[in-house]
Amino acid sequence: IGQEAFCRNTSLSQVTITAPVDTMLQSCFWGCESLVNFNIPATGKYMAPAVFRNCTSLKALTIPAATEHICRGILTGCTSLKTLKVEDSDKPLYFQNNYNTYPDGNNELFVAAELNSYYQGRDINVKDWNYHIVNSAKKIELSGSMTNVPNYFTQNDTALTEVTIGGNITQ
Image 1 (cartoon, rainbow, N blue to C red):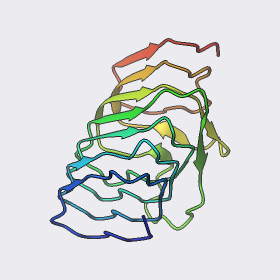
Image 2: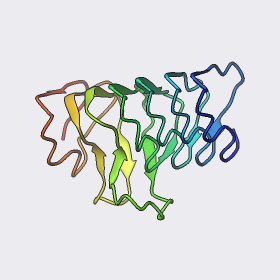
Image 3: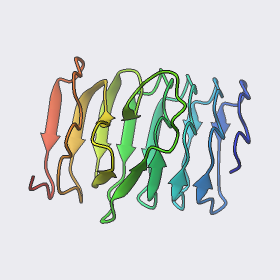
Image 4: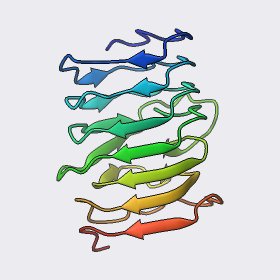
């Protein structure tokens, strides 16, 4: 899906993708304020920066097992997001910080307002250890194929009340 393909379509509330889409380019759904439901196709391998930035009605999102690369700030401004799941896979998810023009200064991979739950079922490789994976989550579950909890996973998260560490985690 091309860069800014559906950007700022404020009435768009649902997107259904039945085609084998594997790439979503920068800001392709940025500012779709009414977008509540979005199913990333199981074939989705790459998500560029700001794919869902300011989709203020988005409630839940699952990053499929096929996703290999994800860029910083894909969920910045998604103030209604309550559930985020990174599906199980034996392949790690690579985080890329190739979008250095954010004025907001956020340094989290997944920025959202007060997640009720965050599930991560596989390792995430982050090249820059100054980045947190998630912030503002009440409940975090780390399980599935995940083998380690990376440095700086979450910090200063005043909403966090419960963490479950299971599966194959050894460090």
